[in-house]
Amino acid sequence: MSSSQNSTVTKEEMFDGNENHINNGNPFSVLVVDDDNVVRTIHKMMLEVKGMEVQLATNGKEAVDLHRVGACFNLILMDKDMPVMNGYQATKELRDMGVNCPIIGVTSSTEEAELEEFMEAGLDDCICKPLTIEKIACYLPGVASTSTANHRDDYDDYVEVEDENADRASSTNSNNN
Image (cartoon, rainbow, N blue to C red; front, side):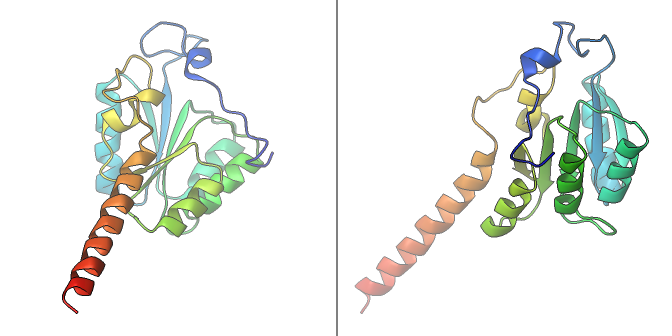
């Protein structure tokens, strides 16, 4: 299945009203894919405090291999830059395998071209680090979101500030000539 054919499940379809359980009564499961042990540990703790079941993978290949042997998750948090198989490659492969749960890119990159390429691999959203529960609340059952905005806006806000700073610098230089 290609990313253009990808159909993700809506939050309403995913949850049965039982705070941290999906429709079949199992705990909401999240796969955290990141090569940084500290980041993995922090993300795991944040999610477990909210009652989520968390599985860890240290690179994209581990995430793909977990799915190949039958693992299934309600949400995948995918780092972009990892050894062995990066987040772009893993996301693309997971989508090609038919994985349709939400995959959220989590990255420290602010390069627009890199983020767009990562999104095009089949992500549902891309969030700039540091990750917080509030940034992914709309993907988690029983967690109230403090914002209705798409958190891709974090990146868009960063680009707008950079553009405004560049415009100011340009006009300042023009006024000084």
